[in-house]
Image (tube, rainbow, N blue to C red; front, side, top):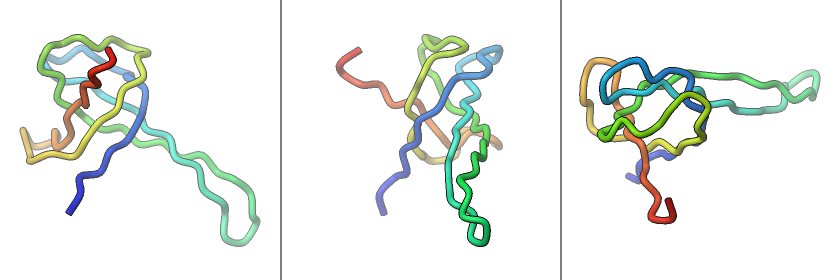
Length: 79
């Protein structure tokens, strides 16, 4: 099964080797046909502590690292 990849903005980097990423999704309401925005926060593993608040990052699902961390930051080769 492929691992999910999401894109979001870093909203917290206070923890060691952990960042909190806020992911926003848009969907159309079934009855009213209006587009709605919903956000969710994910704790992601940042091994090098290189991402700061406001950075746009991609996170990938992984095996559980701790109770809340089941996501890791995807490092692109272009960086």
